[in-house]
Length: 217
Image (tube, rainbow, N blue to C red; front, side, top):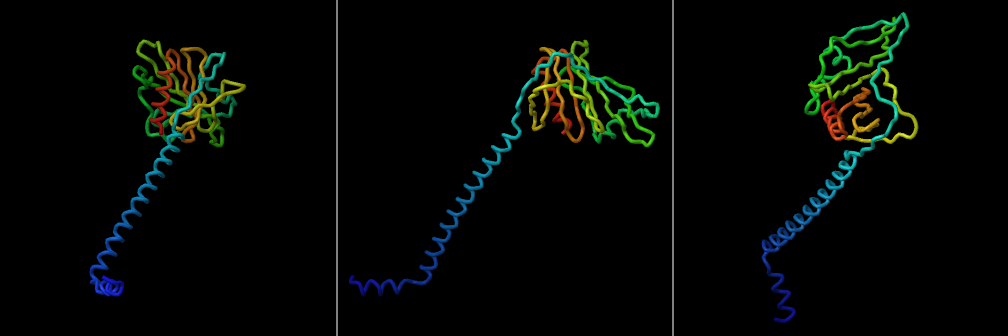
């Protein structure tokens, strides 16, 4: 076949065959494009997942403090201060919470408390709203208290260079006076929390802090 005959044969190719070939090429091209898009999306998910994992990764540092820890409530003593008792349900409503854990860890159970309090001035402005929940083991060898405050933050026990930790994405200060007394302070949902324990080891205390944060979140 010479060059002239070749071009004549090309010209005689059926239009349907040409369209089918173009369609097949377009399909393969589209599949390749879709594969590239899927690959790019997968890479983006991995990157975002890595960033999210980095943000959620716990960083722990237990600060050493020399003085004993205590959850003390400093209340106004002015004669014009009004003391407003609250029930447990009123306490939850005030802090905007549906519930607080009845137990923590494997052995700690919340004590029943008859009332909680708010301190207000004569214009009904809240001066102090710090309240404490208590958890005990059955033999009282392990105790834990949770201090809550919204209008005023509980004062910190430490001074000097304090390193912060992060648990479940929540920034906090962790501290210990010895191997059985631990302390955590953090803010979540506009509420300041202070958790103090005695008789728990470090692992048990940190697990309870994680449990409590998951519950409150």
